[in-house]
Length: 330
Image 1 (cartoon, rainbow, N blue to C red):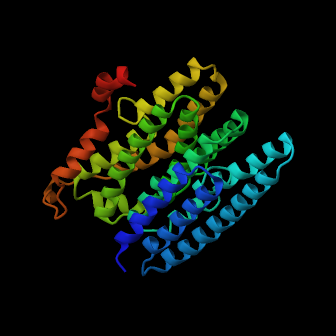
Image 2: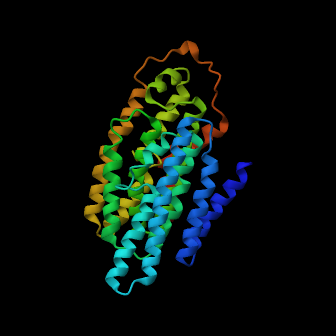
């Protein structure tokens, strides 16, 4: 069956969940999203089938907890019971998007999927649960715990990974902490952060899919044929880390700025420290890219860089110029 229909219902399910006015509508939208992405994930590879089963089991468990908490919320007679029900409900949503410490399934699922499906998991599948959490009543302390855990575990657990899909998964968990923190500021900051994060991930995944790379030991073997592609790959990872003057630095700087202005000093300091820890993971990838000798005798490689890829990468890497033009508009 044509997957275009499933992409359409995937988008419709997310929109229905975000715009739903009742919890039942939100739950139905999330289930539409789940049932739509399963056929999209379908592939001939054994690892993909295993990842699909893991993803379905986790999402089904989270959906069951969510439905149970919705029923409990309707029957709640006291304010304390209602608050505890909200904690259970939000925890189920955190599990759905893979936020730490409920992220146990996330790297394992992504490591078994092809790059195209990885991009969907890293970007689109975060929108509905995250917006539902923020648009419902929540405790700032409760959200802050998930921010700290996501920033910490996303940084530390990616250190010894050699699978690039797992590295991007742990990087995504770290960025979940930053996205949640951006919601404590304004929705505009979150939208800007999400757009930049999606753009940089798209650049990285386009390069890795084009070169058919899944592990770090494949990087030097294939990229030794194409210095330009290697440079774009390295610089995009540095941009994803939030290193200035790349584009990825701007949303993190805006989040820290707004957190400090709103007296979230401890939270902003924790995010900065854990991001510095995550830099080790990104530097290990980028430095290993240029650790081998580059030969000028093999410049003519069959996978030439298209103008589209070059333009998208130029946008993702020209952060300092965009910062000067747009900082007063945010």
